[in-house]
Length: 170
Image 1: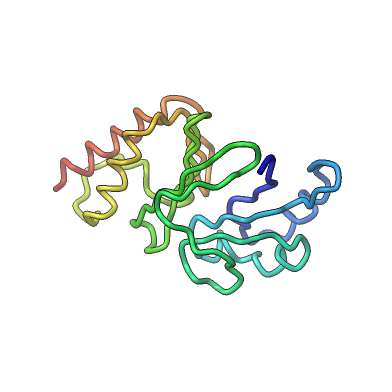
Image 2: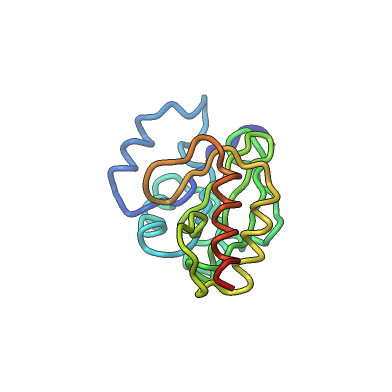
């Protein structure tokens, strides 16, 4: 399939549209060919209608939010850029949360999935604990969050420490 210009979460800031328009995205290619939503909360999906109208991307999400073309399935693989990413269903922040994992690069897009847990908390459901266990089995180097600075090294150690905290509370 090649190189697919992908936007993970559209956010809600209209300024992103001008930033995309000002970015070289390849000869004859649309600035955004596909959108993958990590979940449907407004701060991640609020600009979807505008992005669809301007760039006409194919839209993927784990929910049936208006404007979604394809419902993501746990374990599905998608081209993002020039790499393959695995969709990992991670309920916890919301019932439609997913992470995107690229094995080749060791990169995880986490959205708002609570992959950093600093204190023992028994509020996590079994489905989330199982998803965190799956993430810990991946070779994660870098984690990109829906908010804040990314973790650029030792992502797997951070995930495993979070899992230990979650299990400590159960």
